[in-house]
Structure formats: structure tokens, C-alpha cells
Length: 173
Image 1 (spheres, helix red, strand yellow):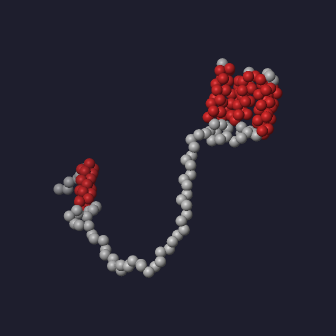
Image 2 (tube, rainbow, N blue to C red):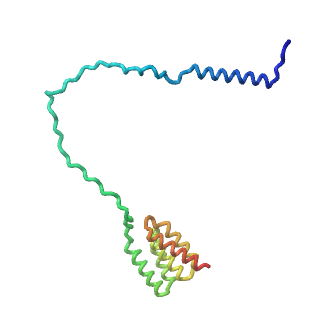
């Protein structure tokens, strides 16, 4: 009598056979040598002994002074590059004009100074302050944000720029 196996029975029989094969294969392979054996000894290499040299003269090398260690980097803020005398004079003139209430003249003078040194955060801040005094808070905020691009490691200038931005926002509301 021929017995017909169902798919489930055949699948179970094949799976059991595969698991048995994997188990037997794992038992037959060794991943490391047994611990009872001592490790193999390193090969012996016969090299002739080198006798100490007594006849060779010792060479004397000149003595050079030891280098002095470089100073540790300073944690202080880096020295800003000096402002040119032209832009410094223009900035002073603009401050005098703004103090006198002539904001248009102060703006023109500061714009001239910025054309000479466009990466000077102090000039952009001064221009922002003039616009704030003039009542143009939008321009003041814009120029203070421009100054932030050039503050570098000068946190005092960065702080001043944020104060102008805060004042400009307060003036808008």
C-alpha cells in the first residue's frame, strides 16, 4: 500500500532532516584546537652571536641646544586687525554728524567707509545705530545682522549687534 504524504507532513520531514544535518555539521567541525594540547613551540633559528665591538671607535655627535617649547595658545580673544586711519576718521566724522542730528550725512559717510572696508563689523554696527536713531528699525536690524557676519571671534561686537537687533524689533512693535 502506497501512502501519500500531505504537503505539511513532507515539509516537516524535510525540515527535521535539514536541522539534523546542520547539527551534525556543527559537531564535526572544530573552531579551535583542543585545550589539552600545548601550543606549538616557535621555530628555532640558529644565528651566530655578534661579538661586542671593541675596536670600532665611538663617534661623537655635536651637541645641539634643546628646542624650547612653543608657548601654549592663548585663550584670550585674538587681536583684531587694525582699522585703517581713513575708515576710522570717517567713522568719527559720522558719529559727530549723528550726534548733531544729521543722520543723512552720517549714513553717507558710513557707506563711504564701508566701501573702503566692507568686512568691518564696527562700521556696519554704526550704520545700524544711525538707522535706529533715524527711526528706520527695519534697516537697522538688517545692518546689524550684516555686522554679525563679520564679528568673527569678537564676542563684544556680536553682543552689540544683538542688542541693536533687539532694539530694532522693539521699535517695530
